Structure formats: structure tokens, C-alpha cells
Amino acid sequence: MRTQVVIIGSGPAGLMLSQLLHTHGIESIVLERQSRDHVLSRIRAGVLESTTVDVLRQMGVSERMDREGHPHDGMRIAWAGRDTFFVDTYKTLGRRFMVYGQTSIQEDLFAAADRRGQPVLCEASDIVLHGLESDTPHVTFVQQGEARRIDCEFVAGCDGFHGVSRKSIPASVLKEYEKVYPFGWLGIMARVKPLPDVTYANHPRGFALASYRTTSLSRFYIQVPLDHSVEDWPDERFWPELKARFPAEMAEAITEGPSIEKSIAPLRSFVAEPMRFGKLYLCGDAAHIVPPTGAKGLNLAASDVFYLSRALAGWYARRDAAGLDRYSEMALRRVWSSVRTSWYLTTLLHRFPHFSDFDQKAQEVELDYLKSSTYAQAALAEQYAGLPFEPEA
Ligand code: RFL
Ligand code: PHB
Image (cartoon, rainbow, N blue to C red; front, side, top):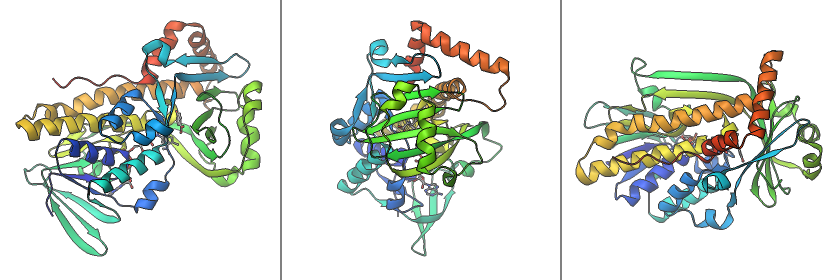
């Protein structure tokens, strides 16, 4: 087989990239290790920055999101013993974010890929990238017991944190930055009415988050120690713990119901630089991970593929390599900005086991300042809403 761009991974980064390339008349083949059902069953992100919403509209896959997604003007912060406050991205910047599940985005992207006859080869194992420093890279893999090969001009590594793409870059070229947090998030989905606002809570018992999918579907998270498993958290234990971490009037407004999904994710910040090696370009979680506290992971996947598709379009239309040469540094500027925001919110809102009384006091003073200062709230609103994309030139 032969194509212009081989895309490794059919998560949001891979499928958005194939759709964007299609709008520029560039051919691609997507290779995915898992089955489509597996990819569609993963429950993850829910908050889309307005830039991500714009990218989805631009690529023509926004119809259901515009019908079923829920625009929000900002998010709320609560903490024990004090009044809650609203960080208003709409009033500050004129920008709303959209609450629309990553699972639904994946469904919309697979449907769009099927409509245009996009090859997405699932259950492809043993993927190996070859000739990345040459003009004739190729990718080998095994599908249904058969060894296969695709020749191409570029490879896009969109295969998430555990994929092969980043590992195909020699260690001597790659610089990795990492911070591991001493807790995880237990997340549940339940068919109950959500609280009106996406609300982050800091409480002596630990962090909690109330989020939204639809008017009758809620997503909640609580901070748990790293050695806990979902078996430690039957619903009877989860609901009282969740409610204990919100102020009384909010706890009263939380409706309980059986969980339909429950999982634990550890929290980590990670960046690999550069995001390019020869003809290989990394996008999304393959190059960087952020803790979910700022809701940035999926949004960074969208900005990476937006920049890469624009750079590839410049190459194919005008043989202009400037965008490709600048891809890594341009993408990394936005990545580091979101890494900083996610680290800031994680540090502000969680209870850290090793915090001294001094650290705890400093966190509370920071929260008090944020609550009392419209300037501080505006700065956070700007970061939470997400930075605009950089122009091409
Ligand atoms: P993905 O989604 O991990 O997709 C990578 C795909 O590559 C496949 N793959 C391979 N394919 C072929 N060969 C191999 N060797 C392969 N290895 C892996 C995988 O099967 C998969 O299909 O990465 P991508 O596309 O970069 O997308 C990133 C996002 O999924 C991620 O950043 C977000 O989910 C993070 N995140 C959130 N982001 C937000 O913007 N807003 C949120 O509200 C938000 N909430 C969250 C989150 C992540 C969470 N978890 C579970 C980590 C909440 C949670 C709890
Ligand atoms: C979610 O709805 O899953 C969600 C919302 C906000 C976050 C993380 C996850 O910061």
C-alpha cells in the first residue's frame, strides 16, 4: 500500500488529523492497535475549548456537537467553609466552552471517516516505523496474521502515551520532562441530573469535581490515593464521600444513582521535545500528558493536529517546508502553556499528602486571593478558555 501520510492511532488526535488532511485534499491511512469498539468504549474528556469547537466545525464534524453539546460560560470553584465563586470565561473573554464527551467526538469522527471512505485499519499489531530520516519512510505491521507494509511521505504519531511513535525517536534526540502527582482520580458516570456548573472542589478530605455530559448524565471525580482500586469504591462508599467534599447546599443538589462506569487514572505531567524527528511528527498524548484538572489533554491534541495539518497543507500546495520546520516549537508553546495551567490548578485544588502546614496555608491564601481578585480570575479564565492559535507566518 502507498499513501501520503500514515497516521498511527485512531484516538481524537489521529481521527481529527485524517479529517483535517482530507479537507486539504491530502490522503492518509490510519492504523489502530485496538478494535473500533474498544476505542469507542473509552470514557475520558468532556470539556472543549472554543478553539477545539472551531476546529471541529471547520472540519465539518460539528453537527451533533452543536445540537447536543452544552455551552458553559465558565467554571465554579468551591472549597470547605467558604463561598463558591464562578470563573467567567464568557464575561472575561467573550468565549464559552462546550461540554461534549470525547466518546461522542470519537463516534462523530468514525462516522465522518466512514462517509468519505477513509481507511482506518484496526487491530493492527507490531507496528514498526522505518526510514524516518529518509524521503521514503514506511510502516510495517501485522493484521489478521498477515505482515503488511505502507509506503508514505510522512508519519503522524497519534498513538497516545503508550504508543510506538515516541519510542521510535532515538533517546539521544529526545528530552523528556515529567512530574508525577501522589494521587489519582476516581471517575464515575451516572444517569442523574448534573449540577448546573462544572465545579472543582478543594476539601480537607481531598479534591472533587462535578461535571456534565447531558441534562440527565453526570460525570464526577474524587481524588484517591494511588494504591486504591475501583473495588475499594463501591457506589455506597462513593456518593457520601463525593458529597462530603462539596459545600452543603451543593451536596444537597447532587442526585445519587447507580454508576454506569467507574475507573481510576493517575495524574501526571509529561512533555517530550522535540515533537518531530525526520518525517515523524508527534501529536496529542504521544508527545505530552497533562493532569486532567485543567481539561486540556484533548484540547492540546486538537491544537497539535490543527498546526500539523496546516503545515502539511503548505507543503503539498506550495512545497513550502516552513510550517513543518516550525511545527514542533509552535505546538510546544501551546503545550507548555497548558502544562503550566494544569499543574497550577492541580496544585491549587488537591490535598497533597506531603504538604507542611506552611504549604497548606500558602494554598489557602492563593485560593482566597483568586476568590477576591477579579484580575486573578481573569488571568485564570484566559488560561482555562485556552489560548488562540498562532498565525501561520
Ligand atoms: P489517545 O486518546 O490515547 O489515542 C491514542 C490511540 O492510539 C492507539 N495506539 C496505537 N495504535 C497503533 N499502534 C500502537 N502501538 C498504538 N498504541 C496506542 C490507542 O489504542 C488509541 O486509540 O490519544 P490522543 O488521540 O492524543 O487523545 C488524547 C486524549 O484522549 C486525552 O488527552 C484526554 O482524554 C485527556 N483528558 C481530558 N482532556 C480534555 O481536553 N478535557 C477533559 O475534560 C479531559 N478529561 C482526560 C480527562 C483524560 C482522562 N484520563 C482517563 C486519562 C479525564 C480523564 C479521566
Ligand atoms: C470531564 O467532564 O470529564 C472533565 C471536566 C473537567 C476536567 C476534567 C474532566 O477538568
